[in-house]
Length: 378
Ligand SMILES: C[S@@+](CC[C@H](N)C(=O)[O-])C[C@H]1O[C@@H](n2cnc3c(N)ncnc32)[C@H](O)[C@@H]1O
Image (cartoon, rainbow, N blue to C red):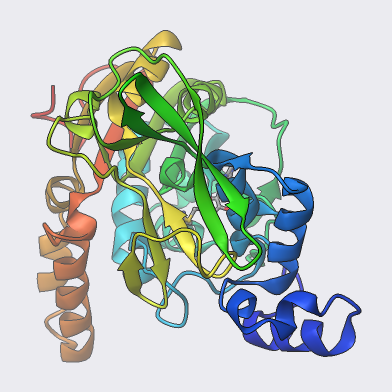
């Protein structure tokens, strides 16, 4: 479902037709981001500071002007690329994995795939295409439920749902870059411990201000770091969606000791604006993505606390290669256009400096033995 407005054009018409033009007339403020979002943030600040986490939440998810409220953010025309939009091969690998889980479970019907953070449905489409072309029994058993704030997909094979969502007896929960899109608390370590970072409007621009000192277990001893306080609870609720089955999670991140390693003194927050990565969340507000690396130790604790067995995490490059993506490339040699498209896609999806770094965590309940991609994982 489209929300019916577009970025630059939208901003221009806001300046021209609404009464709230003060921000648009100020050249400094106009460079800050979506004028109406900036206005809403300044109103909420009411002359004071808001925690960075709230700033990030408004920037990405403000009900009207948040970054993710507008379609077209992901892809060559947008600000950044994700695996499902690189090539349907990514979705075919995920579909193959879900199929293996379905077979291991004795081919239950219905078998539900839940996809939180479904975006505009790219992964859903390639998973369902694979199922249709490979196994009528699997396709017949499948229900595909996409969960996305402001759902906007239009594939009739997909059901778009919002919480609360009824759990399924058997199924898989898949997500790609869900947790790294959650708002995070930001801290700078000072002499008395971690100090929470807040954001104010100084009359011309957004600026950081220190809030209070907090006490946090195992926190880094210096530098800047983030705490994603929604990830653990969200993972537990995802586990609750399937009585029997699996949760398959793709995200940028590290185990806690690596995420909070002493040498990582600047945190992991990154912004993406028109395919350029930078570290300033206070500009292009509502017009750029903001993301942080996920604490995989917390995700593992969450699945274990729900009675699931964790497998991995493994690197996306290892996962995709063990799912047979190399053979998929070779299998297209009779069509050189497709062959080169797949070859380029495989390089991008497994690039050790890019998408290949993404970690894949599987968690299973009521499903014995190892699953493809995790045979050698701890
Ligand atoms: C980085 S994008 C990834 C989109 C898609 N999975 C992909 O790989 O192209 C993050 C997505 O997470 C969605 N999201 C954030 N919080 C969510 C939540 N609580 N439930 C479902 N989706 C959420 C955002 O709206 C956004 O579409």
